[in-house]
Image (tube, chains in turn orange, cyan):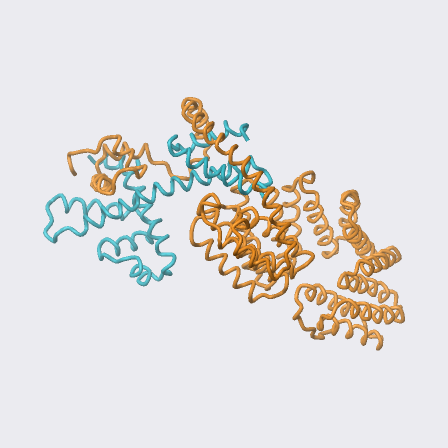
Length: 459
Length: 162
């Protein structure tokens, strides 16, 4: 053992990793010799990461914060002041980015990329954010536009510099989100191969360095949805868990609730309704209905559906009764039709066949009016179920033929048409039973997300 | 956001972040908050969560430097000439004692590294780990070794022995 002990200051700086490499090595070597005096000093300085949350330490920290308050206060005041200035600047930039977005959208689609690459004005981080956001929204209504907007976002993100984004980690975060959004847009268009390519690029950025946790969570969340759609449910569930950890770390309880709903979808896809219901209940505890009523309604809607699917129609009915005001408050036509649909399903589950029939007729007509062929066909199949339960074969046949004609007029999905044709043929031969109704319904739900899906008759 | 200031002070004190390093951590977190504001639901909770995470990363970085120094020092001790002085023999014996206290997985990994001079790719091959995970596992083992080297456990035992 060497006689020359490092000073207590040197030992402290050693633990903090603040000595020069040579000095670090010398102290390490000294400690390795087992010097009890120095080890007694270092042992008081060493704190494993996991003790930071112990209550005693928190109390101690509160006292320490008071004692060293001025030092910290000075730093906090200075940084908060700087942040306020940046915030004001960002608010101005946001307005400017919104104007740039409008300008970009007025240009013909074929010229948008050219404009982004040639005009310096359009090299704007917040414009990129807006494109990502719009691509996400377009995914629900106009899938092709979603791809185009996400491609613009990817191209713009590639032109931005770390300085323009407030640092390398933010630039990488933005680029990863743009790539993931493009992957998501391809997924919505059922182009899984190109979706995969985009997510490989996004994941490479995630692995390259430290990204803001929120960006990481968003990329992984979109990837979880892709994996679910690809039928890779175990991977989807694992990704949801990683996203949940990130949101928990960031204290984003609403987003954590959204992730639990997403995980619930994956369980539903796997046919595990009990796990889905458990997650939906947890999600409902986390989502603030005032702050995010739409998300809260989604969770309730899915829970009522799950209760109905698992044969607990009475519980579904009770929950539906309490949720009705929320549907009415949201007010849009599609949501009201979804409410009516649930009412029909629950009524049918409770053997109130006449009520169910009226509800299914209403929603079928509503979706036809709105020009939503998949929803109209699914409602028609539920109505067919009512007719089948009452042995009204002539009505089943009439409904099957009408549904096929209406669907044909609005949509050319070959697999979906084949499924409805099979249903119509079965009805002609008085062979359309509940099993076939369920099979066609389940196929149409999947076909609405995948234009290449082919129908195979199994009933 | 100013109302969150007392909570942040406690947080920095809890993680014992020196005030000169507090500025960087807080600035990064606040800028991220400003830039990502539209997608953040609860800014206060987000800020506290992000800073807590950055404090942990801060310590992880500091610790990594420490592990690297310990690794370099041990490699140097083991690379000394074949007929070492008494000091060298003692150091080797101390290292052996330290390795004895580690979990089996770390013991075999570090023994191969220090006795046979294996580099991480060779360690991965020899111990059946994937090349991508060997660096993580080595860091964990170095962390365990360092912990034993600097904490009270060894201090008490040595003191009793002396």
